[in-house]
Every structure is written in structure tokens, then in C-alpha cells.
Length: 502
Ligand SMILES: *[C@@H]1O[C@H](CO)[C@@H](O)[C@H](O)[C@H]1NC(C)=O
Ligand SMILES: *[C@@H]1O[C@H](CO)[C@@H](O)[C@H](O)[C@H]1NC(C)=O
Ligand SMILES: *[C@@H]1O[C@H](CO)[C@@H](O)[C@H](O)[C@H]1NC(C)=O
Ligand SMILES: *[C@@H]1O[C@H](CO)[C@@H](O)[C@H](O)[C@H]1NC(C)=O
Ligand SMILES: *[C@@H]1O[C@H](CO)[C@@H](O)[C@H](O)[C@H]1NC(C)=O
Ligand SMILES: *[C@@H]1O[C@H](CO)[C@@H](O)[C@H](O)[C@H]1NC(C)=O
Image (cartoon, rainbow, N blue to C red; front, top):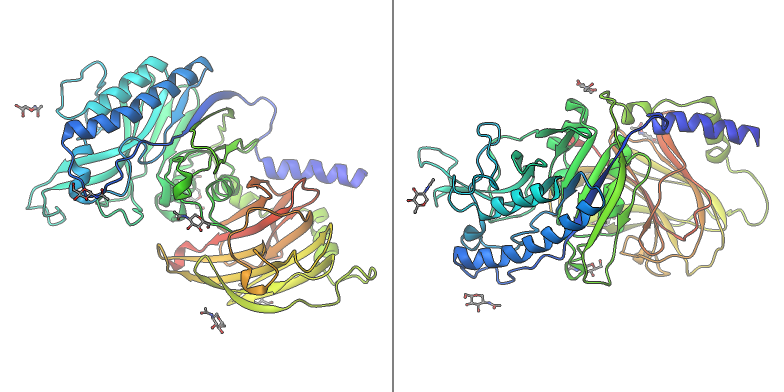
């Protein structure tokens, strides 16, 4: 008992990084929005038709700001494409776009000075909304910027289209804008000339960084903001299409926040018909989230958020610190298999290949009630030591390893160790999308990763997410442990990104 207590205490120091006492909090909100969409991607609307659709969305935003204001919210985040929608062709998008002046160059409050620029009705309404609710407001919208043909990058139609986040302060002044760097096959938009590291300051919680959706999978600007600019809070508008087993919104976004020990404010679209649901306010202390694939309603998620003041880069580095108690635990669980009786599997598991999320994984099946398995791919070897509540052949699980370049829907290098529940009782179903599970499994998962950028995920029955009890580096292995979950395990994985090899 004493040992466990002591270990818990030490791990607290290690994992939380910041002391819990003396923390200040503020109230924040993200809104998961069932956006009103123009579904015909080729229809050429007039500006006033485009404004009609956008006003429907903006009016819903206003209702959320009113509700949030009553709860003392200081900052609210709306999703990517939440006002104007998605799936446009380039000409069809045009009437939805507005010119957005550079807040670094001009100070402009659209609510107080609506006629300074033409075609800025959306900016005007957003600015008045922030003012009315007396809160910071972040929304995503379409931006246009005319360019000269002397500019070699200028598109043939003489203008840039950017996927842009705008930030208004509590008075309605346009404080910052960010143009999305990693477009996700968005043919109607252009990539800005240079990557932007946008940081804005607030009186209630200091600095926030900002990026959009697909950006979260790349070093620039996402990881760079955190590692090179010391940002501890990230605003993250997204229109995220869930992809199981590893890239469902809540699962991956919480893993990203956990890996760095930051506050991440993820606002997603709510369109279950496109697999878009899953928003959250992921903090080092708590991670309230919303996932609902049944209802068509939106959701205002409001939470108290701790102010993280430390400006040091800590989380990835500090988690390398280990203590001798952890090391001894690893030896016990991950060392030579103990002969503890008939429930221990003597079957080494069946090794096979399967494609999971477009990558060719090497898998090994779990057998028996407990065991200790290893599977490798290139230079990555993944291990699991497990103990499960029940074992039947129909509840098939497998440990998968993948170390390679991912090339579908984007090109990026990943190293993954994933313990997955298979969709059926045959090996070829391992790696398919599953959301339910009944087996309670205690596990320790580890792998000898070549990258330090490892995002730890635990997904359980009914799209519930959990955090590991312990995690960190020991002997060149990154590990996590989890015991006593109250729901069946669907997936436990390390989604590693080896950015240098992209
Ligand atoms: C989309 O709009 C175009 C142009 O108005 C029209 O020709 C086409 O039939 C529409 N498509 C659908 C699916 O409604
Ligand atoms: C706004 O549009 C009107 C009519 O096209 C034009 O006369 C005016 O110069 C424009 N104002 C600005 C600030 O661009
Ligand atoms: C964080 O670490 C990186 C490299 O490890 C370093 O270049 C950067 O200056 C550090 N940033 C802060 C804010 O300490
Ligand atoms: C949503 O996800 C399910 C399960 O992965 C998949 O079968 C379906 O095709 C997806 N729907 C869309 C619109 O991508
Ligand atoms: C996966 O890799 C294995 C081993 O290299 C190979 O035998 C198998 O054909 C591959 N499967 C696919 C679908 O590419
Ligand atoms: C991981 O472990 C395997 C097996 O011991 C070894 O062959 C491989 O080189 C290791 N990878 C790294 C990056 O150390």
C-alpha cells in the first residue's frame, strides 16, 4: 500500500508538471456547430444569397454567445467552415469570401466602424457578437485578397482565397488572423506564402496560439508554436472527419493535448452524416468532451480551464524522467513471462498483415487471459503486457506495429503501436472501425520509437476516452499503463509522428 501511495505521489509530480495548488481558472467554451450548408458545390450564388446562408449560421453563433455570456465565458471558439460551409468549387466559394485587413497593420473594430471596408458583413456581425458577449471570439471564415499578375504566385483569377481564423477581443476589435497552412485537399483555397505562427494575448489567461484542423498532424505551425514559441494554449477550429481506429477527433485531439501538457480548445462541425462530431476542452487537469453521432443538435461545451503560466517546454522532455519505482514496474510487467498458471497464454499469438487506415500493419493476436507480446515493423518494436477480464475467441484483439510513410490523404511519416479490438472474430477484421467493446483490459504498452513526438490514445466502449495512469520513457522505450477502466477497451495506441522523415 505504502509503495503504491508513494508511487502515485511521485507520478503526480512527474505527470502534472504544474502544481495543482494555487492555480487560477477561467471559463471557456467551444461550440460544436451543425452548420447550415449550401450543398451544391457548383452553384454560383450572388453575394446576397451567400450572406443569407451565412447569416443563418451567424444567428446560431449569436445564441451561443448569449448562452455562454450567462456562464461567464471569457473566450469562445467556433469550428472551421462553420459560417460558409465546405465542398465548394473555387468560383462557387467567391461570394462567401471577405477581405480581412491585417490586424498587425490596422486596428479595426468592425462593429464600431462597419463601413471602412466593403463586403465585410460577416466580420461586422462577429465583432458585434464578441462585444455583446464581452468575450474573445474565434471563428473561421473565407478570406479573399486581390493580387497583381506581377506576383508569380497570384492565381489566374487575380485573387487569393484563404481558409482563415479570425480573433476578436472582448470589445470586438480584430486582434489576430491565421491563414491555414496545411490545406486538406481544399481546391477552392490557396496556401499562404509563408507559414504563420500566430499568437495573441489576453488579459485573463495570457498567450494563445492558433491553427486549423489538418495542421495538427504536422510540425509547422502546430508543434513549432508549442516547442519554439512556448505556447501553452491552442485554439483549434476544425471540420474533422473521424477515422477509426486511430484518428477520431476526441481520441487524437486529447492525445495531442496530453503529449504536450497544454490546453487545447477543439471546436468541430456537427455533421454525423459526414462523420464529423467530437469537440473538447482538453487541459492537463481535465478533458470535458462531446461526441454524439445520433443527434443532429449542436453543443455548447463550457469548462473551467487552468491558467498554465510556465513558459518552459516541459512535457515531452520531462516525461523522459523516470524513477526507479517505474523501472522496477516495467521489469515486473514487461520482463520475462512469469509462469503463473493455466490462464497465462502459452500460445505466442498469430502474426499477420492487415491494412489499417491505409497502412500495412504487422499484427500479432492476443491469446489467453494474460500475456506479453511483441511485434515489429522496420525499426519499431511494440510490446504489450496485458491482463483481461474474460477471453473468448470471438473477442479478438491484436497488437499492430507500423513504421513508415503514410501516403493516403496526405503524406507524412508515422510510427504506431496499436492494441486494437478487431471488428469480428477473424484476423482480417483487425484494424477496421469498431466503437464497442466489453472486455476490461489492464495493460502496459511500450515501443522503441525513434521520435519523441508520440501521441497516447485510449478509446473505450461507446467512444469514451481515457488517459493513461502512467507514461514516459524508460530504456529507450516509450510506455503507458492503464488499469481498472470501467469500460471495455476499443483501442490503446501510440500515434507517433516522425516529422523529420515526412
Ligand atoms: C447544382 O447547381 C447547378 C447550377 O445551378 C445545377 O445545374 C445542378 O443541377 C445542381 N446540382 C444539384 C445536385 O442540385
Ligand atoms: C466600396 O464599393 C463602392 C461601390 O462599388 C465603391 O465606390 C467604394 O470605393 C468601395 N469602398 C472601398 C473602401 O473599397
Ligand atoms: C523549446 O525547446 C526548443 C528545442 O528543444 C528550443 O529551440 C526553444 O527555444 C525552446 N523554447 C522555449 C520557449 O523554451
Ligand atoms: C463514416 O465512417 C464509417 C465507419 O468508418 C464509414 O463506413 C463511412 O463511409 C463514413 N462516412 C463518410 C461520409 O465518410
Ligand atoms: C503487407 O506487407 C506484407 C509483408 O511485407 C506483404 O506480404 C503483404 O502483401 C502486404 N500487404 C499489402 C496489402 O500490401
Ligand atoms: C527496436 O528493437 C528492435 C528489437 O530489439 C531492434 O532491432 C531495433 O533496432 C530497435 N529500434 C531502435 C530504433 O532502437
